[in-house]
Image (cartoon, rainbow, N blue to C red; front, side, top):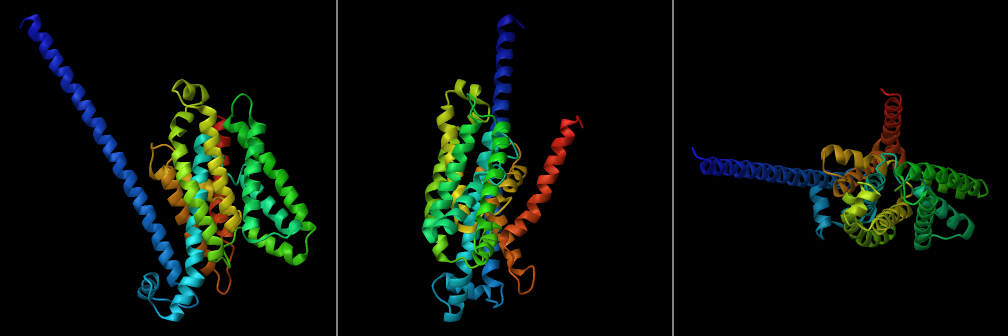
Amino acid sequence: MNARTAFTGHRTRGGFAGATAAARVDRLRRARRTRFGLVCASLALVAVAVLLLSLTVGDIQVPLADVWAVLTGGGDPGSRFVVHELRLPRALLALAVGCCFGLSGAVFQALLRNPLASPDVIGVSAGASAAAVLASMAFGLSGLALSGGALAGALVAGTAIYLLAWRGGVSGGRFVLIGIGVAAGLVSLRSYLMTRAEVTEAQNAFVWLAGSLNGRSWNQLWPLLGCAAVLLPLTLAASRSLPALQLGDEAAGGLGARVERGRLALLASATALVGVATAAAGPIGFVAFVSPPIARRLLPGQGAALLPSALTGAALVGAADFTAQHALPHTQLPVGVVTSVVGAPYLLWLLARAGRAGRGG
């Protein structure tokens, strides 16, 4: 075999190996896309199942056929009142609030590259709740004005944390520590306001601060849906820069990403999501904290998993609210109590694991 024949054979083998590698990569990409679609579809089905369960089960049992009739514009007057006026707005609000919290938590954790970087840990939710308590007790605001106050509080808290954490860039660890400090100060302010309030006002505020969907109606749902219809697409659009930002400021800048612009857009969108969700249902704890890790475990190696995190949050809050309504007879718990039962042990486990890692174990 001469040199030309050997070179041709080597080039043929090299081309075959390259084609094989490209085909393998293509198969892996298709498998990842397929798994992503299956996980999202499964989470959406869980959320729909929780919704239907919430509409059928209660003090007055409504058969699924009657629920379907009401949802399609029919049904008898009694079923329409129970389903459409009492249960449907609350169930939809639970899903919408969970979606907002789940997506926001995924953005914070991925952008700051810290599992503790959740809005209910670093002070954003505390800013929304403190502003809402101030608006309610000091100025007597309610309804949309109160919701606007909660949104403004979240944005102010997020801006303050960002400015305090800025040192020629934003470190995830520094952002979290400063956020925890800001949260402590805001909780103190909130407690002071409640000690100055009337007993009835303070009691109502305590229920709201636990995160409650009790008594929610269409009046709370429509504003949230309107805000979510704007914020969810904006957040997903801003997330196009997230893979580069997760590499660090220098690497992202080297790849041509506009670091500060992209980071501010993501933080502003995620903070606004927290504000509108908190305004609608109160600061429901740990949803933004635990939803992203669950989604990432379902989709290992697929980055921030923003959409699955949002769907996980929706299913989690829907299931927690159903549990809060029916866990104890003749008693409706705040939904935040149930989510805390899930989230608090996870936080302790995470801190314990971080402690072992810090000791080299």
